[in-house]
Amino acid sequence: MEKFMKWVEEKLVPPMAKVGTQRHLLAIRNGVVSTLSLILIGSFFLIFVNIPYKPLADLLTPYAATIALPFRMTMGLMAIYATFVMGSDLAKSYKLDSTTGGILSLGAFFMLQMPVNVLTPKDKPLGFVLPMGSLGASGMFTGILAMIFAVEVYRFFSVHKITIKMPEQVPPAVARSFEALIPGATILVTLWIIRDIAGFDVNNALLALFKPITGVLGNNLFGALLPMFLIHILWSFGIHGMSIVGSVVRPMWLIMLDDNAKALATGTSATHLPYVTPEQFYQWTVTIGGAGATIVVAALFIAICKSKFLREVGRFSIIPGIFNINEPMIFGAPMILNPYLFIPFNVVPLVLTTVSYTAIKLHLVNGFSTFQAWTLPAPIGGFLSAGNDWRIVVLIAVNLVIATIIYYPFIKAYDKKMVADESKAAAEAA
Image (cartoon, rainbow, N blue to C red; front, side, top):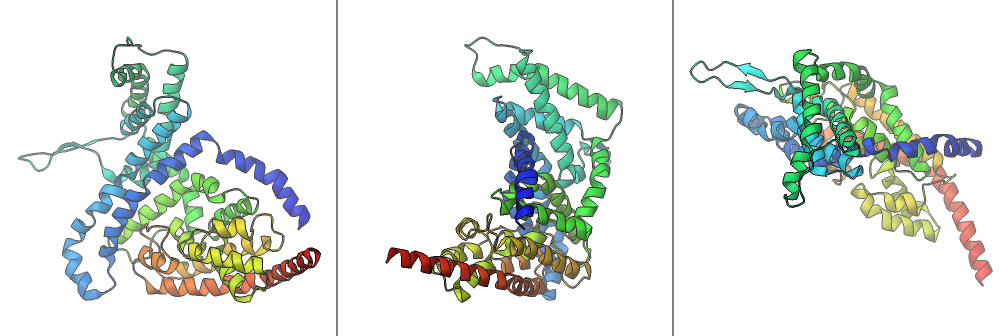
């Protein structure tokens, strides 16, 4: 165990820590996170498309399209919102004007879309419209690529001073607009040639490229286990695993959630959704109370431990843990570099992932289709996110029991050690 922990600390953690501070990945993470409030609002309306009470469901069915409209205007357009924020954040990291970075990124993203000329109705045709299919989660990869290209071109022209400089008397907003003219023209003309002249569909190409990866992460047990393994290994050494791993896989998790939501809205059974493991799968059935399902640790510290220190940690950790805030436990127990808790902290998420994956794959419970506030207690968040499915609550309860069984012997051993240390300290102080 000591050799393994040393190997992880020396070989795995340093490169992963560098990944976590990489400016492009930070911009992607911040852009995606910025959309969550809108996704949460839109997902709330989707709950009413899948009401479990049949008389009420039948009453609302004729209005399903109207009820789902806020969902389509939020999650259905999330790539637009995220692209602007990602571009703004990346430009800011280069000490460039953040608004210009966001606008150029958004212009690049739209340049990669193909409008459709709708000639109906005949008396008043709609004209050119943008299909929404590539403006939501399915367009995230295009938004990321467009953002990186736009901001890097903007930076190149700014560094080499290939911009139009206005006199100092000109208002800053106007001056920034003229500074963006040359890099903006370069960006838009380049992408116009690629998308319209050459006819290369960047969005479809990226989706085809990432589809095997999304499929492995979303519908394969190994792919489901891999993020949990990396997140918890990093946490074990004091690095925020979700910040690093999430910045890489969250765009794919969002595509999974979006496809599940669309499938549900078009009549697919909630137990036969396209993907098993969007982020909500882990959030509500695996990392219950935070990484490592540490709500169980807090409860065990209070219930079975004799160590005054561990009982105190349990008491101040359990309330935040109910709302999925487990930093008090992570740093209080601590879970970091703790040889007594290293094994269960890393094993529990893998076991719970396997159990939950199997339950959804066998259609025993609904899949996840809506985004809910991560601070909701797991039974409530899971129930709502899985289309008001009470069976998810049962699955969460089963997982809590499994986690308790796994943690129990390790916590007993840790408690014994802490009691001995406390007794020794008391004897020395006497």
